[in-house]
Length: 310
Length: 212
Image 1 (cartoon, rainbow over the protein chains, first blue to last red):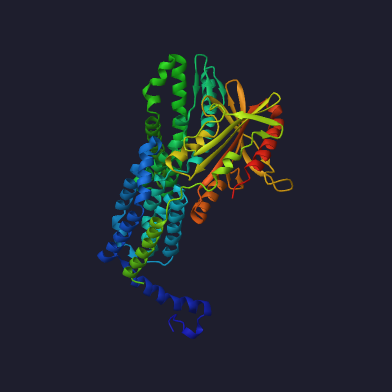
Image 2: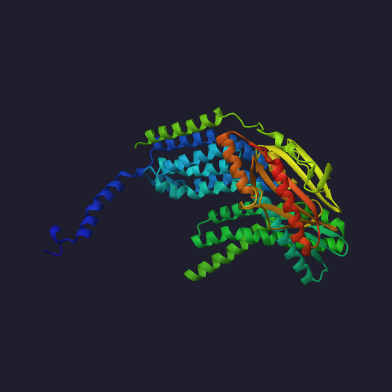
């Protein structure tokens, strides 16, 4: 029989597998890349989502404008759009097959929008935006398209500020932590310092690690930066994950270095040091220092990876 | 289901959500502001006078009304503020978290554990928020809770969830922030200080209990 098995000799579980295969093949054959009409439908759905969320977006823009630590929010939608644009070729080739699993997601997200808006909890309402978008893409275009687009959609979460109550508690803990590390480092350098909570008492003056000096307000921006940086080039997933996660501790490190430099200059130069560029543009200096540290880490990891492959 | 049908279903859902959002009238009214004025002039053996220094209990610009009293008992002093708020999470209300206890010139803020049987003896005690604020030269113990009607919330997240539920379901948006402050002694006296605040909290809650 030349190795061909008669159907009646096949074990039952294999027979089920053989029987299921044609259906899967048929489904694969049905799933085609999206036509213009389907992209248009997605465009209309996204436009409708944007229209529905206009009041939420106005509130977000207000927050980004009012609080300098949230101003990275303006860049987030642009970076998200860039991440999608980067995948435009693979998106165009991805077969679409809308999934009903998107529908409960959309309903849940809209419930969050309504409850959050009517209940005065903007965080809940805002968080529903990326969830709605995930639902829309899944419902209209299917799982394979979502697999291509989820990073860009999830990235939008970085534009949503944490609830102020959470942020406040984290900020205070961070101030204590930052003051403690700075005092320890100053002690190692040989600068006499007495830490009293968030106050650093130097022989010539007392410095307060204020809310603005804390690392926390910058963490969301730095995580967003790390995630965007990690997506910029083709890299192994593990390097992307490390670069994304490393942005926060690197930001913390940059902030501690800034606090140490400020304290040192206050000790040696006096109050005039508090008017220097590094202290005045604290957010910018921490941001730039973190970018430099990310590039250094990226170079190191990429070399490590290439050496491993060689 | 074809893409056109799916898009139609989606637009119907969006329209329903938009209709809900736009047809709902904003909740701005206070249901029972009278309970704010129920702050008594005496709490047990403590007698009071009007007013509390803003350095001790800051005034929040988003409060609608407030009653602030200084209580004395022998050489002990305690400050009480009961403020009415309407709504949550707008731009002004968000900053309220900075106005609960003093924030200027503060070296350290230590959370301390405090619970009080607000709902009466034999009921499970309510865990209240309490902090020791350490400023130059002195320490201040501040205990506080949010109250919606008769429900007291020591946890900020439980309070916000309850207020959200009230705003959506019952269309009420009013709540009270009740604060009690007193000078805190050294750490060894903390449990005695907490016991004093606990008794004041129970008496104060009983006086304010006339809500819905």
